Image (cartoon, rainbow, N blue to C red; front, side, top):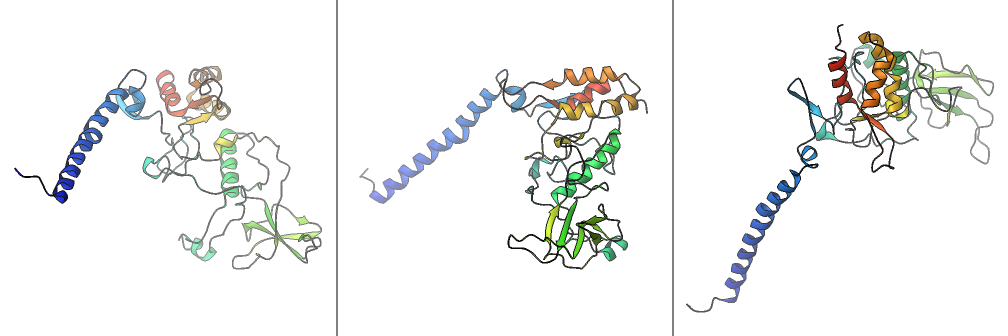
Length: 304
């Protein structure tokens, strides 16, 4: 056979390279990685860290889940997870955070006409601050403790004012002419009666308060709220299966009362399912909610 033309030799070489790399990257490498992943200590995580109860798979220790009824209300017999921004909650195909930051304090209120008609206003938006305030108030009511937080109104929205009036050289309104509670829609009674001698008004839908100076009001809530931060904020992934020990212990009295068991028994279960710091020094101890609830059902079945 004669020597192959140069262009054909290049195609043959490319074909050989394709076959070699297909075997290496498409077959050998996946097989080696799969084999390594099945080694003791790695197998559980590689297979999804699946968790079973009564012989049935009920979830993963790596992905959180909600313990709520069909209407989204907390099931009082279970420890509650932290909030999730992933899809409808803990959706691995929609893992995400809210992308809202600490300066997101003003709500876009819904059209009252649509609300009255039972429709949703697609332009309405709840700020991160009001979301946190609403969650804190709800958890406080659920656990029988104060849900008060700095910069939150007693009604559970962000305590934020729009202060209108002439501004000084620094851009501050020193002598207000009007003051509006931005996150409290009329006919609500504002959380603050007056601000610098001016009556505080509720937010009238359709009015433009954008020229006002936005002023958050701290209020009288303690610097360290009773409801911990992880109870009112979602994790970056939206899938975090853990809660803080502090949040778990906040739920002890409710769990004990609902299941008619001693408080000490519930606390012991929390201690049993509390993980240490990563590598012994990173992060804080935490509790995997799913495993804790499974053990709770096993040791103290709910009879309600």
